[in-house]
Length: 94
Image 1 (cartoon, rainbow, N blue to C red):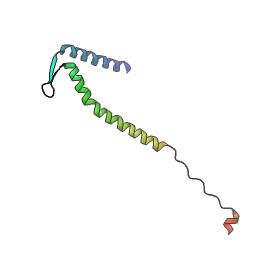
Image 2 (cartoon, helix red, strand yellow):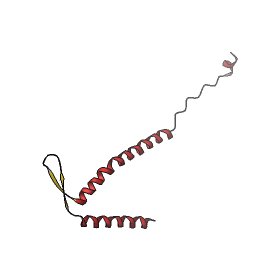
Image 3 (cartoon, rainbow, N blue to C red):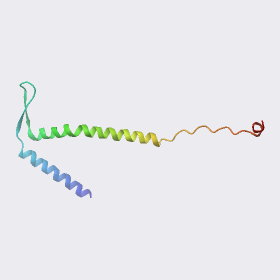
Image 4 (spheres, one colour):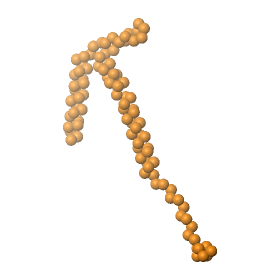
């Protein structure tokens, strides 16, 4: 199973490398005003992916962290109340 996972990631890496080399062209991005930026297409695609992937990933990690914290609090042993004093025979007869 580990071999198949490694093979999958190698195929993905080779595909991305071939895609990047075939599409290594400048793309002009119009920013505010008259400012323009020339960026290579694979870098632009990677930045777009990161900008779209990062917020949901951070939200998911925050939820997992919060749930683990709640679970740890729930699993923590609670302090037992002190035992009630047992009445002695003198107190029970009075």
